[in-house]
Length: 318
Image (cartoon, rainbow, N blue to C red; front, side):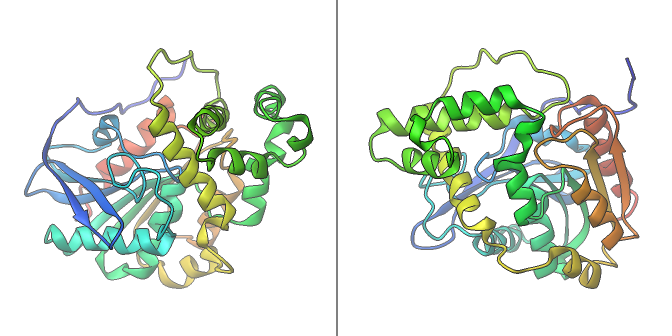
């Protein structure tokens, strides 16, 4: 088995956690840990809809970094949980910068994986002057080809999970599973919506890693599962609110001076590596690590090590 030079830092507690009112509907949760006087870094979670967890604090040296984690609108500890009104990528970019201002931070390092990579790029394009660098993993740019892969084509590699996903649905709905799941997950009847949400989320979880993971014995929280699925399907239904934007071209034109590290699992079945490869070509200055024994998860050893190597590198670029 291959060994890697870096592993997660020890678990750490927050020294600040807060809610910030971002509009008439949403309050967004954020937390701060590490060194109060350290180099700021903001962690952007994936999904859309996933929320943050304590393990994600551990990609960063707590003696060096002031680590900020944000639960995006409708996610995690943000309120209202699962709310999709006023919930677009532009809204999330707005919230990130509002938190930067609230914390009195001029510039920070941006770290995002999967959907968080989309959001990190969008934030850097809008607020380039406030970004010291980008660490991006499992690149996703919300293009039709990428959504089609996740919503259909991936079954070529994972026919069993795809069958489980579709078999949950009535026979007449199986030819359009995303539409059927959207209708069920947004049902007002939790006897319909929560089981559908759990099934939907389980599909993505089952294709996250190169090697199968043991089943989790963690108790399922129906409300959290429902919120995650509602936010994700809301974004998918609107093509993640990217519209006609060409993020590759925008990155090529506007981010050429932003130090960037791209980390990608070669066998990523959620966000196939062609997108990361194309981003590297659009940003020739970026450091690109293709991890040969990894899928999509940030917690596979090679990917974890490469991400921490990137945070170590940025310690010297301040």
